[in-house]
Amino acid sequence: MIRVGVNGYGVIGKRVAHAITLQDDMKLVGITKTKPDFNALTAVNKRHPIYYVVPENVDLFKQHEIEVSGKLEDLLQEVDVIIDATPKNVGIFNKPLYEKAGVKAIFEGGEKADVAQCSFNTYCNYNEALNKDFIRVVSCNTTGLARTIGPLTKLGKLGKIRVVLIRRAADPVESKKGPINAIVPEFKVPSHHGPDLKTVLPGIDIVSVAVVVPTTIMHLHTVMIEVDGSFTRDDVIETFRKIPRIKLIDSNEGFASTAEIMEYARSLGRYMGDLYEIPVWKDTINIKDGELYYMQAVHQEAVVIPENIDAIRAIMGAEQDGEKSRKITDKSLGIDD
Ligand code: NAD
Image (cartoon, rainbow, N blue to C red; front, side, top):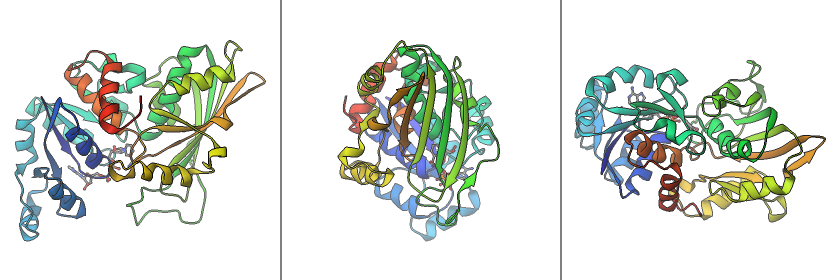
């Protein structure tokens, strides 16, 4: 049994914690909370032991009749690996605590790549993460791109890859973020997403640009890749069809936008109505004048959860074969093989 803790129980942390409880080879020892908010109540309902990180708030937990099992440092004594799901750029400050406790750590995509010995995606570089001390699961956008571009690199030689990312403005829970009536360009051009993808797919030639739109669920990626004629549209469809963490969808099935995709996802009955797979619109896949085109969406709150579970097996060296880990994870999460 791999003993796992989750530091930071927000959008990503609570989903990873839940997924850990579904694994036969892992045990969730506990999670941390800064304050006794609604996420703390979720942890109570799910019987996850709660550890505190802000000593001044311990009395607040008592006032809300929420039992705490100790502090973060106590949790670190009990685990083999910690998932750091604290907000962007906070994990780097936690790293010395993990080092001191001699605990392995998995960081998330909001941290810079150099927080870890390697960045991670199951389909791209599972083996690189084996037995490391610190790894980083790449962000939701990067995971989405890695899921489709990674397999395409094995199909044939890819030329320049261009991606336009249309990004959700905030997660559904974030009531104070905007914009609510504007499309905001990311003024850093090209955006950081291309270089981030290269942390798990170093051989590719990619540029990306991004805009932020007033929606809370799902990013949409428009992908354009120069190809050399060695494979066809049907080969691309067949490649995507064989990958369980990609779901081919079609506008003729009523998937007219991200709204229908998330309505479909909620009907699957998974935790939080999550869609772990990357939906790719089959009808957008086309090869014209030496360029492959397709559009895909990303359920940003959910997509990295399977990779976090695989990352635990990889960092612990508990499963040497990424494909075997993927199968175990997918079965536990209800992803069809
Ligand atoms: P979040 O804000 O929803 O959750 C973070 C949690 O950590 C909150 O509950 C917060 O109270 C807590 N926290 C804050 N400081 C802490 C500290 N010092 N110690 C312990 N807990 C602390 O954030 P999130 O969206 O879950 O993001 C977590 C990480 O995952 C980030 O690196 C982010 O970039 C990445 N990520 C987010 C998404 C997404 O769409 N939300 C997708 C993929 C990756």
